[in-house]
Image (cartoon, rainbow over all chains, first blue to last red; front, side):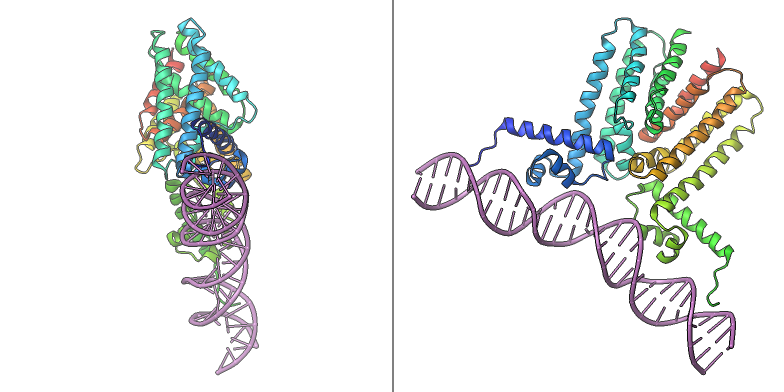
Length: 187
Length: 187
DNA sequence: ATCGATGGAGAACGCTCGTTCTCGACCTGA
DNA sequence: TCAGGTCGAGAACGAGCGTTCTCCATCGAT
């Protein structure tokens, strides 16, 4: 058997590819970035890319799935470092504020992907819904721990802040949503 | 001067073109619909289309602008038929509920356009921001009339309901947002 | 009746896309 | 050393895009 490709190398290449693709897709949009651009960014030959992901759609779904894992892990780590249930819910919006203020923030990758491909790619649509459902479920668990049944409005405030921050390219919706959540929780 | 084209005909053609383009763009996405598809839907020759709008981008902006006028006029007509200030604000969410339940509802055309073209078309981005600003300003005026300073959270709840209804293809976020607004306004 | 400008129908252009193919270099096992 | 399979680099392909051009029928003015 000539020319070996180790399993470890495959893992590394996948990671490089997904990382490059995620940065490009997020910054410029999915349809605006061609596979050649992805190739030059990750340094992998096109042939290898298509061996790892048979179609661009598969790559897009994998990018969204990987980003979802990191996004929710980061949120959870921040939020669950706070002991008090009420403060925990508020910590979600502090985390959102920090996210919105990141350089290169361009809104929610899943909402953007939904706008681009939601009507033409069933797998992408499913991935977007899966991410939103997971976020809502997690948020619902945290809100439920306060004993106050306001999970749905808190979720809608979070989504409203995310979409508004994305369009206006400003972080302040996070604070406004946070203040509203304080009211809903506080009585 | 041979072969006349009256001003009235131009107006009618513009309307037919914008109507056909809006339906197609909203249903399938902007990038997924080619100019040929628009042509066959409106029945106008390509040459005429490009005389009315020199580029596809111009057409897209005009479609969004026309939709914005109708969207806000419809909302305003519904809301301002309600006399009581507090009921007026709640009427916004009744109108949203009816919108979400319309057949063919596929989310907010401006949020979708932002996801598709927000990072590649400055005019489209400006149009999206203009629409959202106009909606927020109008909503702020209605909320201010109640004397309770909750305009921003009410706006975020509306946006959250719109984006969530669009992704999940369900109308219930409108009622949940409405209930939260009742809380913010009421007690 | 004839001329010339105009508009309609759609072919054509140049480009880019996602995807596949070609081909030479390389490495491994015998 | 040699043979054969595999890989990398990039050309190539077919389709579709936005946009422009060609060509002919049509009409008003003379």
